[in-house]
Structure formats: C-alpha cells, structure tokens
Amino acid sequence: MRCVSPSLFRRFWGLLPQYVSVGPSQSPNLSSKQSSLRQSCSVRPGLLTAPDVVSYWQKVFEKNGIPEARESSEYIVSFVLGAKTFQSLDSEKLRSPLTAVQQEQIQQLSCKRLERMPVQYVLGEWDFQDLNLKMRPPVFIPRPETEDLISLVVEEESRKCEAKNSETFLVAVPSPVILEIGCGSGAIALSLLCKIPQSRVIAVDKEEAAVDLTRENVHRLQLQDRIHILHHNVSYGSAKHLLPWGPMDFIVSNPPYVFHEDMASLDAEILCYEDLDALDGGDDGMRVIKIILTLAPSLLKDSGSVFLEVDPRHPDLVEDWLCAHPNLLLALRAVHKDFCGKPRFLHIQKQSR
Image (cartoon, rainbow, N blue to C red; front, side):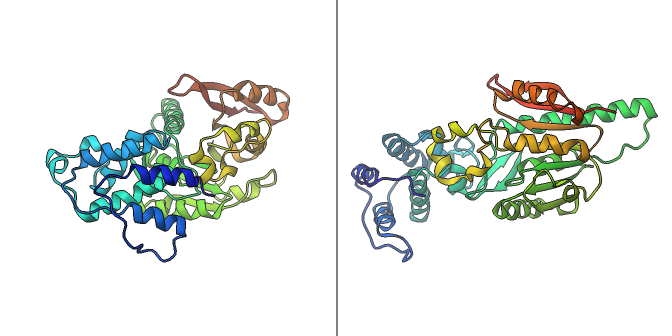
C-alpha cells in the first residue's frame, strides 16, 4: 500500500537544490514512479556537512507534511554516520564534508521517509529498553510507553521475591515463567529476559513475520536458551498450547486494543506499513483482551498476574467485564498511568479459590 500521491512527487521535485542531478537508475526492479524519485534524489558530491543535510531534509519533510521532520532527518543522518543520535556526533563528524556514498545513503533513506515509512522501518533497527532490535514492516513497532509495562512487571517480581524471602529465610525463589501474547519484534519478551535474569519466557504471535523477527532478535542478543517462541493464533482453546513450562507467574501483553471505529484516524505511517491486526481490537477494543482474561485462570499460578497495555477507556470496561465473569476469579489490582497521565496499564491478579 503506497501513500505518496503524484502531486507529492511533483512538489518534492520542485524542492530539490542545485546540487541534485538526475542520473540513470541503478535499480531495475523499481517502478517508473520510484525510479523517477530515486533519479531525482541522486546527489553530486559536494562540501555538505551533516548539519547542512539535516536542515535540507527537514525542510523537505516539513513541506511535504512529514511528522517529526527535524527528528526524522537527524535520525537518518546519524544512522548513516554510525551514531544513535545527532546530539552524540562528535565535532569532527559535524564539520567534515559527507562523502558521496554517505550522501547517497541519506538520500535513499530520506526518500523512504517521504513515502511516510516510519523511521524505525527506514533504519531497520530501533532501541527499546537499551536493546538494539531489528525492525521491518509489517511487524508492530514498540512504542515508548510500553517501556513502562516492562517496569511494572519487574517491580511486581521484585516485590514477590522480597515477600518470599522474608517468609522463608532467604531460600531459593523459583525462576518466574512469563507468557507474552503478541510478541511482535520481541521487544517485551527480550526486555523481561534481560531485566529479570532468572526468568524464562514463552513468546507467542499469530503472524509468521513477527515470529521470525523475534527469533532474529533473540539470536542477536544470545537469549535463545531462556525463551520458547511459538507461532500460534491465541484463542479460547489455546491453554494446552501455552504451557510448555507449566503454569505462569505472569501473562504480559500489549494486545490489539484500538477501537475499530478509531482505526481510520490513525497516522498514515501506521495505516500504510504496520500490521493493522496488531492494532484493531474490535468494536470495544477488547477482542483479544477478553481471550487473554478467559485463558488466564488456567494458565496462571495462584496469585499470578496479568499485565496489559490498554486504551484509556478500558480500565472501567475491563473492571465491569470481570465483575460480570466472577467464575474467572480475577481481580483488577491496579491501574497505572503512562507518561502522558492517561490510564494505560492494568494489573490483574488471580485469586485463590
């Protein structure tokens, strides 16, 4: 699905500076429209520094309505120069003219951003919880607020360990087993493996592309010995498939929770490139949430916990739904806000019979 109209290309061509020249395309598989764009992005070597190129592409992005124009330009230039952020570039790299190869790389990546491709996909990698993870469409891109979900699970595990140690005089505490439903790139699962070194994780996703990307990131971080990755579409009958290591201490998920009526209003970057099934939660945004909560009693240990990232409208809806299903023996223990002050995370606990 493409998001660039012919009028956008015409506007873009009119913005190109004098150091841009048209040359033959080097990519025989490109469409005529893509070929024209690539030709127009071919840059002659010149005395262009990193700040020059950042400023230029910022203006191009702004005139074409690309969100976060400055940040996008800085991330692309920094990536080509081997840095995480533009602010981390040393003074020598900021002053030195870019090579022709570097200019061409920046042009190619910037043309992808002009097509509203998210920066994470443009670069092919992204940092999450200090982990550098591979990213590629259409696998869901982890959002910054999800880092708080990781922190809540880690805090609860620390609390449980302290409580057990105080009761049992520092005997060994069993390694926690964590189930992540909807693993995507593996960001949540891998973060928990790193933050809770003794843990084991079962990571599940219904999309083969997500499972493959999680496996790739697992091997990059050398964590394959403590994770079981499962290609499975979780449903109400999934319990027997999700217990390779027995009952869970935690179920963690950032499930599809966008209300279906809100899907059309999502940014073009999302609608064009990301897996919409990873976002669309149905009419009430709770299609997958209800499945997770229905499965939870048969998957969790006594006093085990479910941690969910949800829409700000969901805490009341979930609490009402749990009250309407008392047989599940699940209680909403806490609602936590994200960094914008919106109720975003739910802690639900299994009660003893």
